[in-house]
Structure formats: structure tokens, C-alpha cells
Length: 342
Image (cartoon, rainbow, N blue to C red):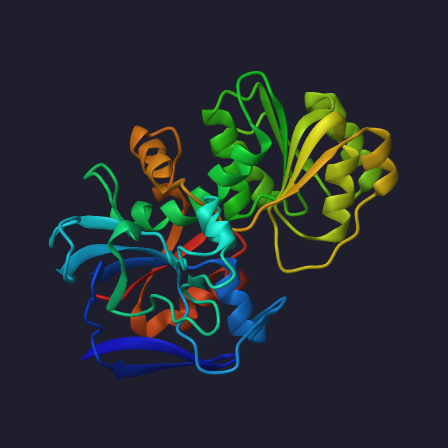
């Protein structure tokens, strides 16, 4: 038997004993060592839904996961038992048009951890396809390996924007994903990266992670002036909040022909279409990621992004609720990590 933290309804998590899942053909069993909390986990805890993803039955949260391969199913030669891995928490059908085109993250039948009705990794063991258990080097801690998942979100956004040397970047929002987008942009050679946020403490964090400038997003006009003074108009905007005033400021700060990537989720917002059209902005959406885990692991192992520094609290499985509420209780909390084996 194993212990599992289960969200039975909003604001209510219970610890249950469940059978340990056995790996089937092409699968591996992973003994979970670290699960970092995502904002989506908190949304489900608070509301039981995110947009069109609605919880209709008890749900195990957690999808930012690392662990050790503890068993392998038939036909699996790698990764071997004992291999430390970062878990890419999605399983696609492999047959649909999106999968055939390599966009497996857009598969209509994708099963993604902690997205109803698929259980996540607030558990001692999970089973995943062998090719979704990515080996990690000893240079990465278990916590950093869990953070490969949100780092992959940031890398996918940077790929969408084609960030490279000399690019001026504006990151809207200094939450965990925004700070990872900041670090990825700098690692790719961006000449300047400005970060906006309404919270002074979050702006201070962005400065610590290397932002060229930080801007108070509370006032549109003064914020726009501050961005212009710091980096000029942005060639790339990575909008990581999904909040209307932040979206307005970020899009308005974009240079003609700039690329605006919408990374933040969970909200319905409008875009200033007059700005989009007059400047011929390219607006792109992102949904999770595909084909980026190996690159994210390599980037993290190189030391060009700081993942361990983003972990601000540690929790046993019995305190999964404490991990979910960490950011609410501490304005400087970035990543709470659950350790099921402790």
C-alpha cells in the first residue's frame, strides 16, 4: 500500500491508503521524491476547477515531479531501476493528427497529471510511460528535478518567441513562471529583460534573478514610461499573469512587429486590438510544452538557471495543505515542495 493525498472537494484534502500501481508494458514505476506546487494545484484546491477543466470526483494533485525508477514494465530497457528522473507528466494517444505532427501536448485525448480526471503525484508512487521519465544528472537535486516541469513551460514560451542574443524582453509577472522566463531569456542572451509586478517583494526577487529593470505594474502610464526608460520597446513580451491590467500594460509596451506570448492561464482577458493591429504584433498562445524536457534538464544542470533557490518550503505528504497554502501565508513564497517519502 502507499499513502496518497486526495483533494475530495475544494478546501479539503485527506490522506488515503491506495494500492501501489504496477507498471504495464512500456511503463515505469517511479518512487516520488519531490513534488513542487503549481498555481494550478492551488486553483483546484480553492475552486475545484481551472477554466474548462472541472473536478467532478476526488483528485490527486501535483504534477511537478521527480523521483527514482523503482520498477519497470515489460519491454522497458531504459531508464533502469534506480535511475533518478524528472517526470514529464503527460501521456498522449500517439495516433491523432496533433500527435502525428509532433504537437503531442495538444492531443485531444492527453492525460495530464492532476488535471481531471487524471490523478497527479501527491503520492509515494506513480506510473508513467518510460519515455516520459527523463534521467537527470547528479548535479540536480530532487527539488531541482521537480522544477524541470515549470522550467519546461518557460523554455516552450521562449521557443515560441524565438528569444536569442540582442532581444529586448518584457516579462509580465514575477511569480515562479515569470522568474523562470526571466532566467531563460537571460540564458539565451537577451540584451535586456524588464519584469513587471504589482508586488514590491516580487520585483525584488526579479532583481535578484538578474532582471535589467523591474517595474511597478499598478499604474499603466507610469509603468509604460518606466519600461520605455529601462529597455525601450520590447521585441518580445512574455505575459505570465493572465490578469487584464497586466496584459494591457505588457501589450502596449511591445515594439512594432514584436511577438507577444501568452503564458499565464486561468482567466478570460481582452487584448488592445488597436495596438495589435497598428503595430502588427504577433500574438501566440502557449499550452504546457512539448519536446523540451531534455533541453530543460541540460540548461538546469549547466547552472545557467537557479532552481534550488526558488524552493522556499518543504512539506511531508501529511502537510500537503500547508504546501498548497504556502504562497497565501508568505508573500515571498515561490515554490513549496512536498516530499511523499518523508
